[in-house]
Image (cartoon, rainbow, N blue to C red; front, side, top):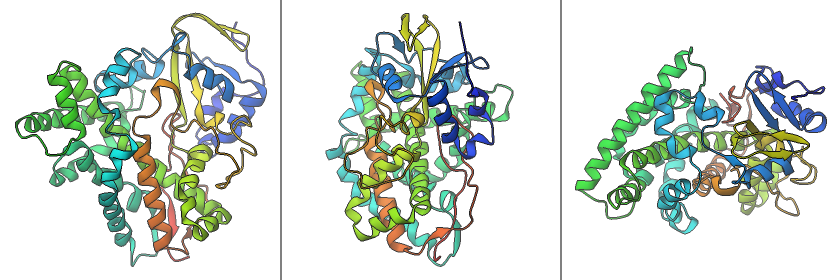
Length: 401
């Protein structure tokens, strides 16, 4: 039987709650850590140990045919197909790009990334009040994308034009305009990437790129043509949304905690630890989902095949089992928190090292160029209203205090 206690699941999707989702996560952890949400027909898990157990259990839980996948427009679902695979198909598709996204390989992009972010900071010079999301964070992953995927720099305006529709693609409401807009954007991106892959086949690059590696795997029979294009679309989508939100949330976290920002100013070598604390405290990866593949009992509740669970990664990151004093933003913790900012298990985010690198360089440049930067208002600062992809809609700041 599905039971509930005092915590209100509807607050997960209430507009007011998106201003501070963590208060409700805390209530759910304390009052009802395995909560049935009848509106969606899913169980919501909020405690660290339960979520880690599910993420590591590929026998009883599946990434295929989840509520999220089924709620997407069929066109979006088609091109995000690699995201919704279990092993062995998941491993077969993912292995094509694992070496590309390894830390040693990404170091070759660091010089270009320093230039991209340096240019973005220089464009802010001479202004006083700006929106850091629109005027800074938004373009950084879009400008880097041609280098990693192997796309012409002159096509950059297309990426910006498609980006809003790509974000709309995660809207599960078939009655909304966003649902249709998302489908059109994903089809346009897929058509473009398929065309570019044909051109790369005829003129291979001197250095491996994401597209050239996918082409090689497709030609070798490791991937189908549709899987290769779908993986390219997934990288296109994920590299923008995750990095944009991580940069924005990092700036926001430090500006809200000036004592921690002062630690960075005194010792810039702490920036990597600072980004890890952002990923734990208020990062872009808020939730993920699974379908029950095989009956299992969890926290005294019998889950049956084809039941669905939502995993509150952000809630787990504020659980005392993740770290001491979890409700505080502390960049110099004695031991690194075991956060789930990029998930865990076989679906650990493939592009996590690149997102970290972009955020570290962005924060270093931003606060070095504008040491007196402050928030332009006292808030509230609106997060996007999305349970799974977390970020700020805008971040107004005064660059010179």
